[in-house]
Structure formats: C-alpha cells, structure tokens
Image (cartoon, rainbow, N blue to C red):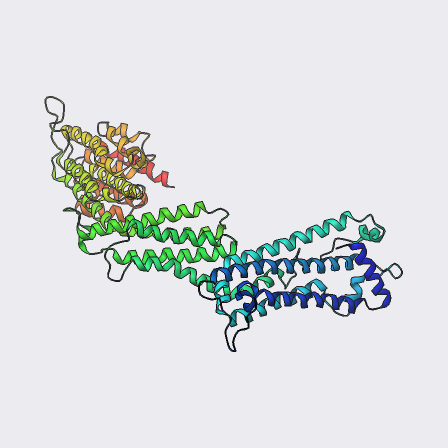
Length: 607
C-alpha cells in the first residue's frame, strides 16, 4: 500500500523488461489465494468438526453437523463468511492500488505510462480481469459447496438476507476504498515520484467507482447469490401464505378472528423487516406481501353472501348480512394493520410501498363491492318513500292560525324512521366508520337531490301546502343527518336544500333574479318548479309526455346534462304556445314570459 515503493519495484521490472509477466503473476497469485480462501471458508469437513480435533471418519462417512449441533455449525459458517469478505476486500485493495500506480507512473526516459505497456497487447485492465476471476470463482465454488452439502444450501437459503448483507457491506467497503485511494493519490502529489500526477487527468480505470457500459461489477458480485434469493423468496411466500390458508379452512363460513389476523400481520411485518437489508430484496418481498393481501381478499370474497337476503332492508340483520359485515370488518382491519406496518418501515423503497398500496386499494374496492347490494337496496327504498309525497295533498290554503297543521308530512316521518332504523340495524355494526360514511354520505346527497326534484314537481301547490313543504325541507336535514358526519359536509346538495326553501314563498319575478340560480340550483329545477305556478294548460314536461313521475325521474337520472333537460322543458313551453294559438287565446299565462326569459338565460349560460 506504499505508492513510492510499488512505483520503484515497477520501474525495476520495467527496466528488466518483465513488467507484464510479473504483474500477471502477482494478480494470478492473488486469485489463487482467494480461491483457496473460498474453498476453506465453505469446507464442510472443517465446519462440522467439533473443536478442530481431527478424527478421521470411517470410509464413506458424509460430513454433516451432528444433530443438535446445527447452531454451532451455522455460527462457524457465518464467522468464516465474514473472514472471507475481509480477505476479498484486502486482495482487491492491493490490486486497486497496483492499478492506480500503473496508471500514474511513467518511465523517466521514454515517458511511456506503465499501464500502456500492459494494455497494448489487448490486455484489459488488471482490476477488471481480477474481479471477473474472483466473481466467477465465488459463483462456481458456492455452487459446488451447496450442491454437495444440504446443510450449506439450507444455511444460505434460509438466512439469505444475512448473506446479502455481507455482500452489500463488501461492496460498500470497496467503493469507500476506491474513493480513499483517489484522495490519497491526489494529496500525495508532492513527492518526486508523483510530480507528474498533477498533469494526469482523473482516470476512469477504477471499476468500483464507475460501471462499464456492458459490465456491472456489483451485479457480477451478486449474480452468485441468485439461486439462494429465489429459494428464499419462495420460502418467504409460503411463510406468508401458510397462516392465511390455516385460518380459511375449506368449507369455513367465518372470517378469521382478531388473533388469527394478528398472526398474518406479524408474518408480513417480520418478512419486511428481515428484507430491509437491501432495497431490491425489499421490493421482491413487497411483491410477495401484495400476493398475500390478494390471497386474503380472494378467500374473504368467497365468504360473502350474495343471495337476496344480503340486500334486504325490511327485517333485522340476516345470517348472510351478519357474515358480510364480519368480512368487511376483517378486510378493514387487514387494510389498517398493513398500512401501519408500511409506515413503520424505515427506508422502505418507494416502488415497494407502491406495490403494497396497490394491493391494499384492491382490498378497499372489495369492501365497497361487499356493501354495494345493501346500499343499492337502501337507496331504492329511500327513493320509493320520497316519491310517495305525490300521494299527499299540498293544494290546501292556509289555516286560520297561519301555521301548518302537522310539523311535517307523512312521507317525511316515514323517511326519518327508515333512515334511522337502517343505520342502527345494519350500518352500526361496521367498524370502519369512515368507510361507511363515505358511502352513506353519497346516499344522503342522492336523497336530497331526489327530494328537491320531487318537491319541485308538486302540482297543485297551495299556500298551506307551501308551509308544509317548507317544514319538510327543514325536516329533511334531520332525516339525512344519521347518514353523515355533519349535514353541512354534504356540500352542494346541502346548499341546494337550504337555498331552495325560501324560493317557495317568493314571486316568480323574484325567483328569476335569485343569485342562487345556476350557481347553486340548476336552471332546469327552477323551471320545473315554475310550472306549478302556471294554469293546467301549461303542462309539465312529464305531463306532456304522458309519463308517470317515477318514469320522469328515471329519465332525469339517465340524462344528467342540463342541455337535455332544458330541451325537454323547451318542448313543453312550445307545446303550450301551440295550444294557446289553436284555441285563439288572447294572452299567455303571466309566468310564461318569465319562464322563456329564464330558459334563454340558461341556454346562454351553457354556451
């Protein structure tokens, strides 16, 4: 490791004309010594001998650790491996140093750089030659040793992360050494020998610092580990799958208990923690974890009840619904626990995290599809209850007290009772509150949309009816409250509910100039509402088409765009004009010009 002495020696051999052969011999010598070191480190006979007292085995006796002595054998093996890494590192250091001096040293007479002497016969640089020899020897010797000894094979496969860590540490040390050499040479440039150093550009000869185009020295080192990695990953996958297959027995009806789920999570955490020694291994194990999560999802899905009783909302929880709730709760626990495991991983590669998160998203989607039939059922019932408002009479005039006779209509009472019961009978049993609210809040928004739609269609609407409908608007907030965290969280739907109520009592001109129009409440809803203020001759769009309200409501669901809805309304207005002309009427209803104006405003807003 002394550049001056090495330089002098090289000069001597150069003068003798044997520089090239000498260097070849030195490097081959290093390779031979390392090969011997590798063989010794993996020598099963030495490893299994108790306290080195060499007892000659009988003929044909296989060398293997005596039962109960495996731990000692493993400990000896890992000590040998650590020693081997030190030996490889030391030899590499010497070759790196030699190469460095060769690239810097010139013959004082001919000024030829020594490395050119060696390279000119097509010899690649010595460090590259040395490294390919060492990595090939490692591969072949490991292969030989593990082929002939089951114990070595099991040790390397079972404790592969330990082996990988040794290799990673070796690689780091080699790179560190490269950088140190670079620095030392740059700082020791004062001696006569290296006076020419300052002129020599920084060279790219050192393979541990830079990858060659078609050769990756780190990959060459780790290639010898591939078969152990494959075996380790396959065992890792079965360690992850076993607890799942155990808790979902064939023909089983129930999801795993909390303790059983814990054992699955522990297995996942343990595999990820052990793999944390290396980003590539972390990613490979993360892919196994993703497969594990998928398996849990598939097994859970098989337990779900999809029969008719899974979506009934008339009686108490059925057996199928109870099981579905349990499955969703179990998927939720898995989802949360795995998330926690990932966030606790320090230095978890982004790609690995992405792999697991994608698998978790599928679990979340499965939870969604498990509750969908029930949500659909509840949604249908809510719609059916709301549409019964048209069976009630809103045409009455104000009573003498000026107050409505009842606090709210019958259908509203029924709606409030139904939603409260559904929440306590069915949704209360889910442990994933956020998940439930995400789904039921969408239902609340839909309920408000349907309520406003149907309220705007009530004809005829008397003064007393308006009072009662206004009370229903207030009660609607209470009706949907159990479905959401806070009613005000419902955003646009909530604002519509609030903005529409005062319009009930305003004049048509007022309504037409309301700032809520188009901003909060769609024009089509307001135009729909203004039909109720017209004489019967001005038929609502659904009356003109001779549809039931339910069919009209379905048509609106199928045509969410304002453009389609306004076109239908325009058709109704044009039909009215036609009918007035046919009977040679003298004037249109007072609300008609206001509606035409609004329609034009709505159409121009769409442009």
